[in-house]
Length: 70
Image 1: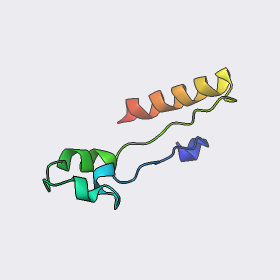
Image 2: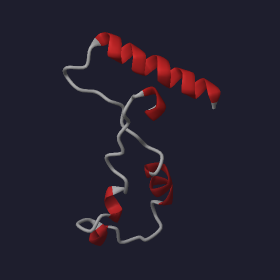
Image 3: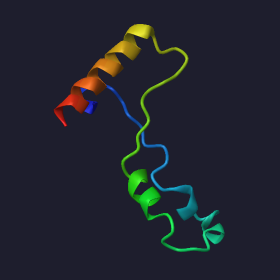
């Protein structure tokens, strides 16, 4: 998507249960291994109020193109 000038964001690089303020609540270590794996693969698509309909269509088209190549 970067080559297509569409910015993706990774807003939560780490699952909340691994963050300093919440670690004490995670009493069962290794309980959320799948969550930890998935967190590394989740990204946010650009979405904001001023995004125009044609920009949304471009994002969708490019995402579909990339997914079909996988």
